[in-house]
Length: 333
Image 1 (cartoon, helix red, strand yellow):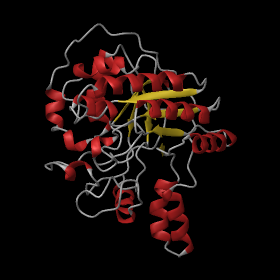
Image 2: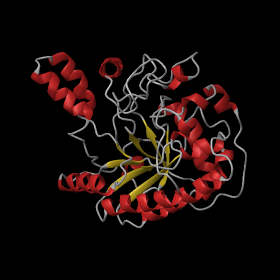
Image 3: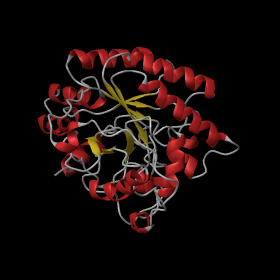
Image 4: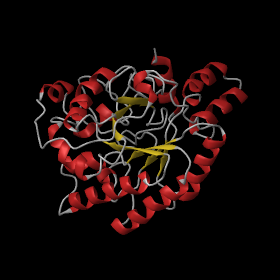
């Protein structure tokens, strides 16, 4: 899974760049999350069939109590479920039905845009625009009238801005994202957050305003930030807050799954984002963030699942990486 890092500059550069004014902000739907004001919060769904849960059960059965306890720190938290199935409807329906029966809200990641991950470790996605439009409609059908939060297409916007999409494909991708937002928002209890990179990738938040508007952020419930990356909450808010203001006060969510120790310093390339050493679990998922316009801290990236081979022979994207999971849990404060 791409962690946005290979295009990231140093955070200092990202935060030092002034936000350009850009066009006049369009209206963005206000946050309805209880998290920013206290409230009762949202009870997110815990995936008891995820890799961490299965691993914790295995370790307990083998009598490895200490390791089971560490992996349990991951397994017991609500984490997003990434959906890239050729037909997403059956899996999405099963997840939302199970979550609704438990009185909880699942976090889903729609991850199937054409040319996904710009041909890198998580390359794939729909074969063409028509296939994607049909796919996102099946995704929405799977949700139906049940509650769900959807993180829409990690990387998709960022790769437009770093020139991954060429030959008119940027316009095509923006149209697909807008259609996806509108399709998902027809479901009455679905919240949608359009992915918007991270504090290392966004050098100029003003440059993101027009693409995000064209991608439908005003129809969405806001945007997602720091997905699969490691920047701290403070670092993320410093940049995402400026982007939010440029978008007329758009709410956003922050991926805190592995940002407990922040991003690695003094490294570049794959080492900066692909299973970097010394990282830690971050703040537990909650809508009680205490941060203005921050709807939730979420574990979007599933801790313990590999970012990719990293040119070091590590597990494939999304595969369980046991030693890395243990380190994330051990290093958590």
